[in-house]
Amino acid sequence: MVTLNYIKDEWVKEKNGSRLMQVDEYQIVETVTYENGSSTPITRRAYNGKVWCTWVNENQTVVTQPFPESDLEPAIRQSAANY
Image (cartoon, rainbow, N blue to C red; front, side, top):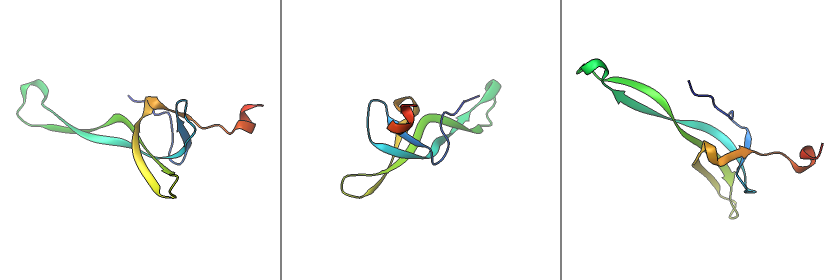
């Protein structure tokens, strides 16, 4: 079982970065397997380790891009981090 670290609309940033992004969704892919030598394919949905995030760039354009979950960290406001 996969433990997801973020929820939709949560604020995150790249590790050691400053760009704030909002989580849109986890990227799910369909995987096809054949169990026990069967010729019948079994299709399952699986998390591939990427999180789609949205932010506004310096040109005021909305950008949505996938990031490996391991490259993200929660975005904590500086004033909240001091308490």
